[in-house]
Length: 300
Image 1 (cartoon, one colour):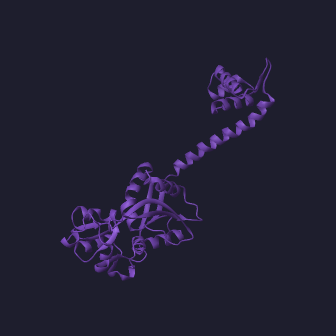
Image 2: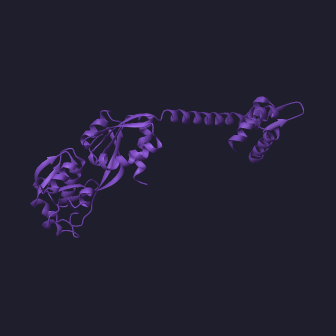
Image 3: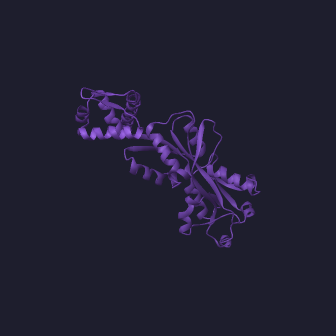
């Protein structure tokens, strides 16, 4: 049973004529007859009674007519909804993003998304993970990206990407000895430590990993707290201390020999990056499309 068969059937019932149904559908009478005959063979029952004087539906045909009308109306509604959806695929989405997702994951995602939806624009608010959660909770941003999962009853978290954390050091002889075998975990307590600010997802995940490895974050010789990942890389490259950062963030400095990057004792530290939205808010149509696109982008 297909749409063309049902459409022919409905028009025959409503016009009481095969020829009139054909005219309205711009089909020949034999084509209309073929559609009705195929439908009757498939359902194994007579649907249209045709005599020399009149054409009318059988009892089974009357029953099918009601369902067929609903199916055709649903098709029209679906087409109309898609047309409206297509026209509405324009506007601006406010997105809040913490440093690592915002600087190193969001650009590729946005480029890919806008190739498909060029009329959708973005207002990107860059901040730390805690502020991202606050913005989504207060509805000042529809969608957020964070580097950690914070306690936020009003937010729904969804993993969208996987990120690796590494310890970075100045490119000096005393650190090159750890190439190939990893940075000794206890060694980090002997070095000046440069940390991201409180509220940073990188900081929260780093402290959690250190605790798992038997290190009390309170024992770190934290001399500097800074909001900018770029500033941390610069400070480390100039010999001011060591830090733990996303590998995505420090690949450029590592590539050009400005810093060295290590796992801890060859233990790979990985964390999840999260896509978040308000638990009780309905996203705008364009934000919903972006949310659905973002949650699957890095799984390809």
